Amino acid sequence: MNEMMAVTIDNRAVGIGHPCFIIAEVGVNHNGNPDIAKSMVDAIADAGADCVKFQTFSAEEFVNSPNEMYEYHSQGKKVKESMLEMFRRLELRRDEFAGLFEYARKRGLIPLSTPTDRHAADLLDDLGAGAFKVGSDDLVYTPFLDYIAKKNKPIIISTGMANATDIDRAVNTISGTGNGQIIILHCVSLYPTPENEVNLRKISTLRSMYDFPIGFSDHSAGITAALGAVTLGACVLEKHFTLDRNMPGPDHWFSADPDELTSLVREVRQLESNLGHGRMWPSKAEQEMTAVCRRSVVTAKDLSKGQIITEADLAYKRPGTGLLPYEVDKILGKRTRCFLPTGIQIEYYHLEDRDK
Image (cartoon, rainbow, N blue to C red; front, side, top):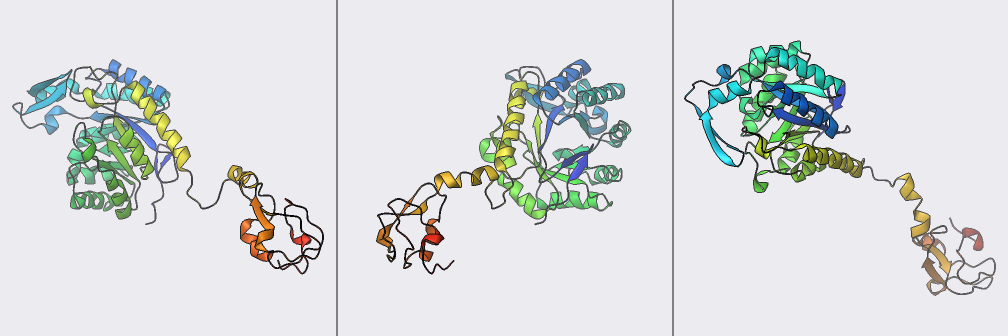
């Protein structure tokens, strides 16, 4: 498969051959408080991530009834409350988003958000968001995908709960508008995702199916899965983030804290350096080791002038600064031109009628 050219988000290239784009997902972990959100921006910038991502929504727009209940873990216990009331509590205003986007940019981060309706998408467009992120829950919301795709910004789609048909439908909806700036994230919509449900090999499957950058939206505990994803070619990593897992709210308990996010960024960058370019030749530094580590053909005994060289006359010893063992057939059966003492590296000029 030929990889698509990188997708560009705010002048940052995302794709194979470029550093993994690391998104710290604030989501609703600001608890509806812009001051907490600002502190999270600071922590994310300090950790070295590339992007801070929020969620932009109106509770009334996507929750149908105040009687719809939502159950989650918080502060070590189960909580059950009205979904509508919970999301009302977690909303941020337009001016608050504007301030957060501005502050994130000052801290060197790319600010993004997941819009859940057209008004939210319009707001993010007005704020100059470099891309739209579509959550797994809205992957099948094709009228909305069509709407945001026509704004001609890159679109990052998560694929939790989706089968191949769902993903194809979403991709075709977006690309059908003429917008080919798509990034697809493998995702499992379980919080946290058990180890045996992470299914990282799906990243390889997605890479074989699409000519778009593929990434991983990670809901598992720790950073192991994220590092495995990078090894498999993930160009984007998204990880939920919190200042403190003990804060009240639906998503804190399974999110990465500042120390974990810092470790994730550090380990990803080290891993990228380890992965290298994949081309089949040694580096310059490694080439310099050949003289030290490889063997040369040397005399195993004193050889007189005119002696026909046999295998018994030869040994193979370091350093590798002379003829190498695979060149021995060019030496065997040849006559020496001069006396050769024991342990000398044999060179072609030592031989009569040498055949190079």
